[in-house]
Image (tube, rainbow, N blue to C red; front, side, top):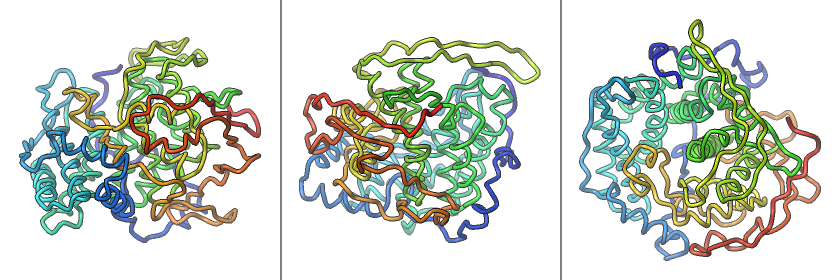
Length: 472
């Protein structure tokens, strides 16, 4: 990876001319604020969690027990804010203070919404206010872009849960996201640290993309949200959906290109792309279903592979190097080896969307979700930064009843009618109806899978995805 090329840059455009939305879409964009709370969790989601936990319902109670046992979710947590955060070689790294505090803020805010205990809301607010009152810069090697992307989207999600608290400094939080986190993430998607566009694997783009989208929603900046949506669909870097998932096979599974690198980074990428899809969905934008549910096909591929299944892999050669400097290439020829015991808290969100909201089969994703349940969060997956890349607790936060649709979620519209959020059309092809593009067979519905936490396996159905035509 290119470590030294380029400066941080504070440019705010992701190639404005190249990424401009069609005039019809831009003209139809509403000036209304976005729905709040409306990043990873809506008001409907939060009310559901509280009611289910109060009733002792499975698997929510197990998910909440996982949360309350985490040391970050305690109201006695005290913030350790820094004026400058460093991540990467050649710098006095102190970024662990940031990710530990953000996860403490998120976990305390989540615990407040479920239990109603005000002390946890107060703790979350105190942590976030401390950082928005002190942090002015993120520095380091190329890894500074990872810090900006990961901790930017996470800060926004924690702050979204307490944005209406009387003591929360909302204006300061918006300034921190817009002036410190967003410029680095925006600049990475524009210039890729002055490297050739394929130098960085997909998760680099996806960390930046999550930050851009989360900041746009949190700050009610529709232009920023539209930039993120357009990059997801058509961005030149490896993190846009067709570059991250370049090949759809005849069995309906779609290669995740980073499977040719290693398992940990492939799981990270799937979790980040799922995060983008979930945040967009909660604002009425269907990226889950975009391009004939390409993300579902890629997630199924990674889940099958991570569970120890055999998957095909098409040789992929990437150009590497700095623009005007050194250059080279790297070829991945097969899917890397896996440890079936490795997991990240990413699967509940994806499985619940496709099987419960949409009524589709997602056999491998469902098996991965059951195996990982109840999902924990930061602090439950080791002390290093990789254990804090996702906010987690999906068993608590994303389990839902079949057919449940979050407030503000996309619904089918007549052809040509713009969506409410940035003129983005939901994908009508995502349907459980026989004969549509996604024809589910086998055990993808996995009756009661979310409630059956602790079940060791799902019956061996295989997801078959019928396609109208070959997808490149």
